[in-house]
Each structure stands twice: as C-alpha cells, then as structure tokens.
Image (cartoon, rainbow, N blue to C red; front, side):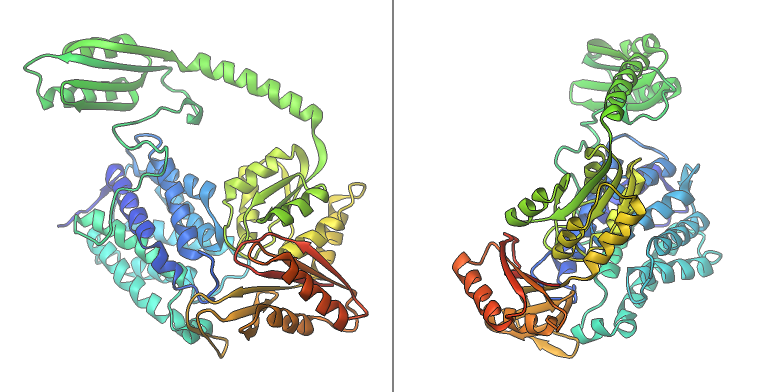
Length: 550
C-alpha cells in the first residue's frame, strides 16, 4: 500500500495506534531501565504522556494535521512525566510547529516535522546526552532529510524512519557505557520506536502485536463526542446545535447521511453526524442553527433539540473568571512553595515547614507537568518555589512554567532530604534571588543515601547485581551492595560522614517497623558520637530508608 499524503483523520489513527502499542508494551520498556530499582520509569512515564496526548486529540473531531498534532503536543505537555515523558512532549511540540497551517502531510513536511521535533527536544535539555532518545530522534531526522528526495511517498519514508531508528537504537550501548554494562538499549529510544512502529501500522494497515484502541478513563472516542466550549479559543460560529433524527425516512440511505454531514460542514465547524441503526445523532457549531435543522428535516423527524448560545456562555464565564481573579489578586501573597513527596511522614514534615502544596510523587511516581503547574497556581502566590526532590522530576518542573503565569523558581533538589533542607532555609522576608541562593546552598550541603532492593539481575558500573540484593545509593549513585538492610544502612552512612558532618537523619519507609528503625538509629548514634542522629517516619514506599548527612 502506498500513500503520498497523511490527512488529519489518518494522523489521529496513527497516534492512537502508536499510543496503544506503547501502553501495551510499557512493562517491556520499563524493564530496559539500567538501574534495577523497583519503580516503573521510562515506559510508564512515556505511556502516561502519550495517553494524555490522546485524551486531548479525542476531545474534539479534529480533521487537519495541524489541529491533530497541536492537540497531541498540548496534551503531552500537560501529561508529561519524568525526563523521558518531557522529552517526548517536546518532540511532539516540534512536530506540531512544522505542521502549523497544513491540512495534510507529504514526505518533505514529514521530514521537516521530524527535524523540528529533534531540535525542540534538544533545546529543552540543559545538557543533552548522546546514546538516549535524543540521539534516536536526531539521527532519524537527519536520515529522513537526506532521503526525502528519493522517498516523496510518506509510506516509504516512514519505513526508512523505522529502519534508521532501529539501527541507531542498537548502537546506543556503544555511546553509553552503562547501557553496555547492563546489556540493554536506551529505554527512552525504545519507547519512541514503539510509538513510531504503532504509527506505521496504522499508516499501512498492517497488523502489529498488541495494537488496540487507546481510551483513557472519561475520554470520549468518536461516537461519544462531548463538546467542551471552554476549550474553544475563538468563537467563529456562535450556536452549539445538537439534535437527533429519531424517526428517519424508511428509504434513508448512507449517502443521505454523508450529504447531511457535508452540508453542515459548509455551515460551521465541529461537525459530528453519527448514524446508529434507526437514529442519527448530530452536533454542529454554526451561525445558522435553523438551516441545520431544515437540512436534517429532509431525513426524518427531529427530537432532543438543544441550541446553546456559546457567545453568551463565554461572556458569563469571562465575567465570573474576572471576579474570581480579582478576589484572588486581592488575597495573593508574595511566596508559595510546592514540594514533591510520597509517604505520610514526609508529607507531614513538609506541611510543618509551611510548604503550601505537596504533590504526590517521587521515585515510584513522577507527577505530570500539569500536576506541578496546578499546584503552583493553587498557592495563589506571585513567586512559587518548586522542590522536585528527584532527578527525574526536575525537567518536568522546569516545563511547568509554560502552564502557569506565576513566577516559578525550580530548585534542583534531587532528593527529599535536600528539599527539606531547602525548605528550612526559606526566608519570607528576603528577595527571590536571596532565597534561591540560600535554599540551593542548603540543599547542596546534604548528602542522601537511599536503600532499596534489586528487581532483576544485571551489571552496573562494574558490579554484578542479583535480584533481591539490597542496594545503597548515595546521591543517586550505586555505592553499596549487601544482603541485610541495616548493614547496608550502616555502610552507606560511613561513606557519607566526614569530620565536618554534624547531623544524620534517618527516614524510615512503610516496610520498616519503628523498632527496626530505632535500632539502626541507636547503632548510628553509638558509632558517630560527634553527630546528632535523628529518626523520622518517612512512610515512603519501596525504599526502606532515606539517610541524610549534613
């Protein structure tokens, strides 16, 4: 099958197919994560990101590639989680930039879109690393540009994209030693290739394993369209008109339904005409609702007629929003703080430090960009300081600035103890710049060890790791392997304590009894007499202990 162009309807099907294939292969992509910790990571984050993109695409019956790709980019940005999800959202963002103003896609435009996707993704990362998803999309874009003159047909060009992508993905272990040691390819690159392979299946009509319709909870698919007037940026057609042809003529044919749809498309936009057995459901935004009804009367009797004046709805909504904004502005404060944490104890600690909003998340669950932006808005502060408290959340927090009008300051806190130390250093009486400097300095003075277990056999950084081994990471780097949790706790602490250390804080997780934690605390206090040793309930899942030394 050959196709020289992709229209909006087909592009939507391609995105759905790519999303479905990734969702169904999420665990396989997660299994490629180099570090064998018990958290879902790349596959989980990318699948949640692409599912959010599909939710936005399915919100309206888009028909142009510009509208479909723009909806995908908008949805991905809202739902992006983790570094891999944020990078995927930026690839889609670049893709949408290239598609602006286009009804369909040919080979040259597809090539441009891939290049824009690669460029936008690279710009979003402060220190791009080769051997990752960034390399995969860049090489794909480069080769597509070279080949576009030979492959003006999008099917042939897309086939080349898959071939090039698979080849560069296989080479990622040669670019990143940690991948070679673990015997895996880059998980983000694999996630991208899964999406592209699903898209190609929809483009060609070929069968591919596990491709299925993606439908997030509450997301309408074609046939159960739900109109969201709030999402309309500009009202060109003012009347939302809905009705049912409840008793169609006995001789009504499919061609009559098609003719009605075409006539309505000349009257307005957001047209949906669905023939279901003995009933025809109709939806259209138009400035001539009477004419829409007149056309439909030619098919049969009308029922459940509903006409909403969207212009009046918009005026009422804007007036209400203006009132709410004025009330909020009157109450607005200078500073707000958002922290990411998971665990009843850690959440309570941040509350006691007057953190305004606590977003559930961390090693086991990365919040989306939209989650962070909503939390920033909920502080009702002019300046919002976000404490991501995880290396895989920092990039998402930085992108959250695009979804809020607040002045957002993201501190690069890589662990919860770093975030706690930063929150302690906050001073509402000083400037944003002074707070940023003081809080960053306080955070960087903390070394954090996290203790968990290996979920599979692997090799990492020259060490052979077996499933079930107890792993002690210091500042996110594997430092100690052992078989007993308490002993690993002692060993990682010994590596962190030096002559300048004054405080050791042990945060115990939900799988550790308080008596066990107290025993570790007492052993540390006995060994490090020059340090204060504190014990706190963290309640974090999967990580037995977080141990901070400062």
